[in-house]
Amino acid sequence: MPNIPYKIYLDESEIPSSWYNVRADMKTKPAPLIHPATLKPMTFEDMRPIFCDELIKQELDNDTAYIKIPDEILNFYKMYRPSPLTHAVFLEELLDTPAHIFYKFEGNNTSGSHKLNSAIAQAYYAKKQGLKGVTTETGAGQWGTALAMSCSFFKLDCKVFMVKVSYEQKPFRREVMRTYGASVTPSPSMETKTGRAINEAHPGTTGSLGCAISEAVEVAASTEGYRYVLGSVLNQVLLHQSIIGLETQAACRKYNIKPDIIIGCAGGGSNLGGLISPFMGEKLRGEADYKFIAVEPASCPSFTRGKFAYDFCDTGKVCPMAKMYTLGHDFIPSANHAGGLRYHGMSSILSELYHEGLMEARSVEQTSVFEAAEMFARVEGILPAPESSHAIRVAIDEALKCKETGEEKTIIFGLTGTGYFDMTAYEKYNNHEMTDYIPTDEDLAKGFAGIPNVNL
Image (cartoon, rainbow, N blue to C red; front, top):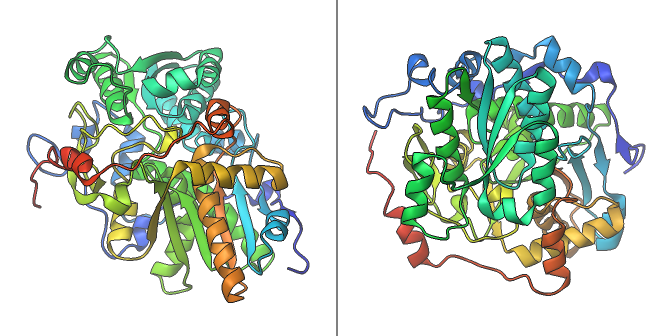
């Protein structure tokens, strides 16, 4: 493509000053969180024992299109933002495709991922409220690392429950969190009532994000001066992550890049939602049209094989219920290496958009994901996170389709972070020890059986 640099950097002055709330442009709003006891929509007062006040306001706001980013958060963003939009010319050459491929790289910070965009916002609002600390869960560890960094910056205590399989597979990620002052506990643990119950019901379990969420919420709700914060799924998180898409949109406008296909990996929805939201807004307003593709692991196929229903957000059933594409809160995914894409459900915003046919979803097996990851690493010079590599896989697939048809499409995907703490997974792949697991219909039926019968 003529006159487009390999890496597109915005100026510091071009960092967006407001987050974009895609709900404002959605004709059908995402279904509200409901109280598990009353089955009524959660109110501000209902949420106060769990979440920070300002974050609750953002969670409930379906109408304000742009929400100003506080100066303290903007100043922190300037340490690593704007992030580059890179033209993957070497990948294009390798594939011999007429497609033009770009990726938005979010791994240029110590946490190694996009998670810092929301972690610093949530830590800021906790500090502003005068709290002592926060609790959270983490899967692969990117969110826990980002929150530990953010809490260290604002001098807040940080308690992290890390999915047990990731705790064991990724000890260095755990140590980064501890270096920033966080306490890290493998989940399910014996430290909480919920954890003990899960261990009793599922002896030897490798854990899940649903388990870890339950433990983190229990500790926050029972500890004075603490609140729970979440790295994905919630409306507020997609709002904070919209800075990814807003910067991408600005870079595209600066160089007259018109994407045809926008791809993101999908676990709970933070990266995908952040990348596509501003572009989805254009589509919802009738200003442009794009093909959006969510990519998830075949081992945890919330979109492609899940049910669109109200379900608990956690295994212990202590959280509100959300209407989302879900595999059931009791679903325990296999111990695969896509640690951050192992949540049983999906963002209510993205679930509604998918339900309306405004975006597509694909599931991919992990050996093909790591094949794409190594292909990308060898020509583009970045070792991608396993989560990000799901998007790489489908970006390559779409580019190869263009090679077959001769179409000159422009593809943008989100490179959510780096894989330098994921070398156990790369080792398994390189030693040909990695296997693919796809749950059977019988496996999924066990999770579906626990979904509550809620018709609203």
